[in-house]
Image (cartoon, rainbow, N blue to C red; front, side, top):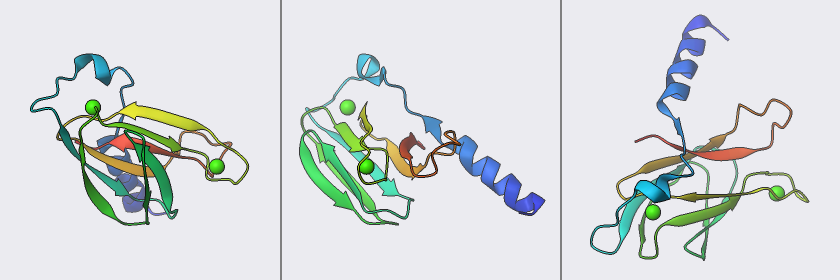
Length: 118
Ligand SMILES: [Ca+2]
Ligand SMILES: [Ca+2]
C-alpha cells in the first residue's frame, strides 16, 4: 500500500465516529419520528432490524429510513455462519451511518460494525 493510500485510509477512518451507546440519553425525538441514512460499505448482504422490522441491505446501497419507534437497530456483527454477535444502537434523527469492516478486531477479519459519519 502506498503512502497516499495509507493517508486516504486514515482520513476515511477518522471521519467515522464510534457510535455512542448512550446516545439514547441525549436524544430528543422531534415530531415523533426520526429520519436517518444507512450505507452498506461492506461486501455482505446485511440483515438488520430497525425497531423490530427486518431489512436486508445489499453492498454499496444507501437507504433512508424513517423510524417511528425510536430508531433502534440490531444486527449480527459477525459475518461467519454459526457465530452471532448482536450489536444494538439507538440511531438518531439526521444521522448518517455506515456499515464497514471492523478493523479494530485484528483477530476476526469477518466482523463488521456500524459507524456514524455525520
Ligand atoms: Ca453470523
Ligand atoms: Ca433514536
